[in-house]
Length: 100
Image 1: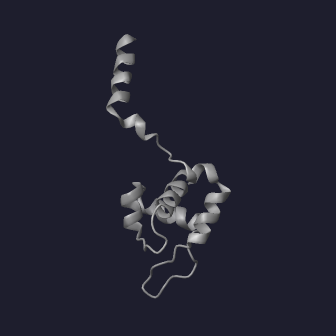
Image 2 (image 1 turned 135 degrees about the vertical axis):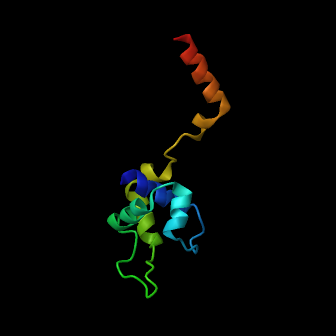
Image 3 (image 1 turned 90 degrees about the horizontal axis):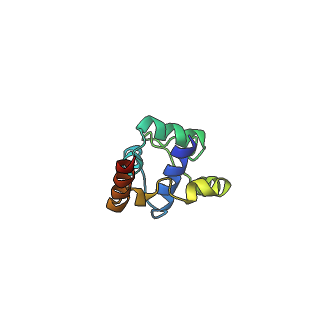
């Protein structure tokens, strides 16, 4: 839950505050399963408890920012070291494995 929540927070806060989000858009940005997105949003109280007439819910940016401040390191820093996906890293790993 902590990883999903932090990923969702990073995604939402890295976009303009007036942007609307759907679960599918969060899924596309985070690669988290739809049911896990819904669970993370519900469990961390990032959404208003009342649904709108069309069935949608409201993400509360203030609640997201409060959650980030409470768990600053998890949501403020990327969970994945993107340099690990570079050609140099792969070459170094293959060299290391070949020496074994």
